[in-house]
Length: 140
Image 1 (cartoon, rainbow, N blue to C red):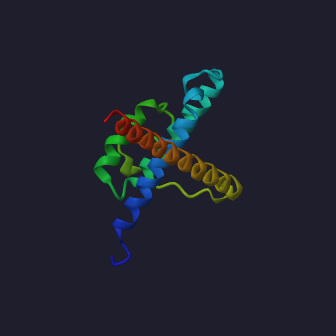
Image 2: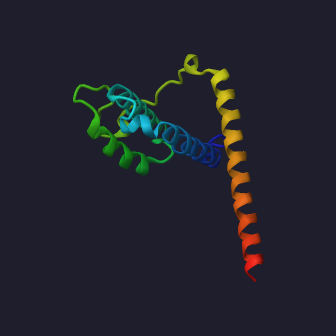
Image 3: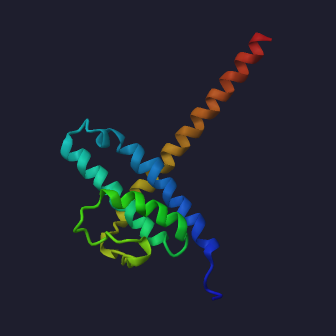
């Protein structure tokens, strides 16, 4: 029981959800809307759905009530014959990690891109703040 440290999971889960919403969804927004074609829209939305469903399955032992609520909403989109369709998320097994699906090169490239984008955003905010201060000083 000493190895059960829920507090170590929450920051990682929040980081993952931040990555998903602020990077995957933001970078694929046009694709999801269908501006790049119906097939691209279907693929990107299916990917997001698969990630959300897998995340809910992994969260179930740690956040049982929230996971159940999310699963009940997600399962409405599953066909009747789908292997992940069950009465409850707690009747399903936690998926195995697909180590072969990891690509460290892509992860490094995305990390660099995110760092650059974050730095650029910080610089823009600082410049905007400086302009406001200069404008306020000039008006007084």
